[in-house]
Length: 132
Image (cartoon, rainbow, N blue to C red; front, side, top):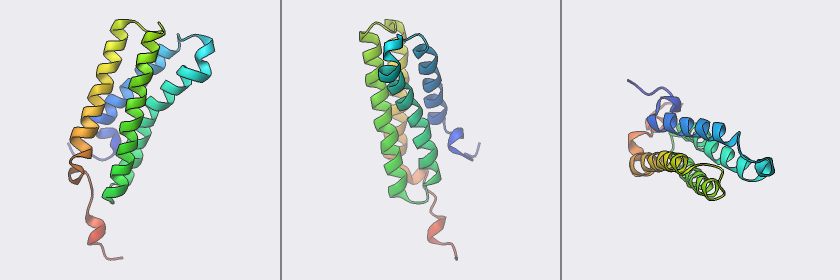
């Protein structure tokens, strides 16, 4: 299958699922966390997907692509830390924590090991040869 958009990337699909899993779990967080942990974890988990879409759009330039992927990786790490807080505050179970932390780790491995270390597999080089 040819990748037509960032939505076709396995890492995007995993990150999207993670963001939706977090959304569902955070519906049960205490109201006093609405503007703190709930908002923060939703934002960082969604930002992974949003930055992936932007990275894909900027893949003609390796530096731009890597910059956005670095942002994805950072947002994913932030999400992982928020998952730890959610667990330690008693908002999610140990099982839920393990599942979400494993999803964060997998997204991180795919971003760092596959995309950031080997951007040439994703970068489009036709801008170098096009006649404008």
